Length: 279
Image 1 (cartoon, rainbow, N blue to C red):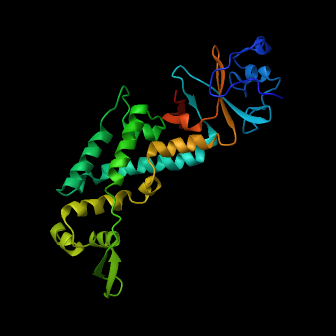
Image 2: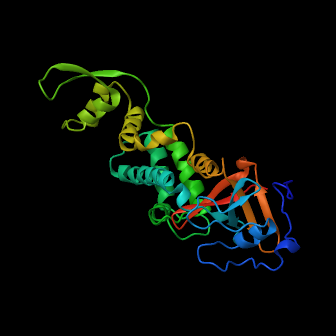
Image 3: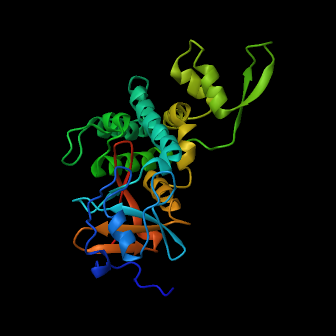
């Protein structure tokens, strides 16, 4: 059967679906699914199938645009989404927890600025960034802020390969440890920071970076080569690699999307990404 529609543009509703309402008449079917199915003589497959319609041999996932021209993803991204958001939440919480242990350095000033930004409101929302993450309700402004903070602190993480000779707490022998292990071992020593800095053969600026790495080093790894927003964009785009996203609108019609790079995560609502399409 020849394709009767165009991709990446709005296709108007035709007389084929004129008698089918846009609003759903079934509990497990979303708005627009029945009307779109009527355009091609197909019926929605229901909630037990991972996509909504089988159209011309293609798997179609139907999403209705809201008043903000966005749509929400559901259970299809839940597990991967949770890892991203949980890591983000822990990173920001740990940065705040550093507030009382920071030393006087340029790196500490950067971290203090991040703390101030985490604790301040953004855009039109009255919800603080941390509270929004915990409630799974993150505005576009707060998502931008979280992304910027993570991009700032990950540049401060210590990756330098260097060993420090310290006495083992087990048998007293002299052993070489990596920088982060050495820093953590010295935390248990009741000696001034100036002495710790001397042992680690670094300055206060580098010591502050070791502090940060100790607090957020494990969680920041998932953002090593990609930003928070890029990570979320990759996640939402991955859903539509073998399933075609089709937007539906009561007045405009339906719009099959084939350029996945135009799909991006705009904010988070009800515990899942809410997406938009670049125009």
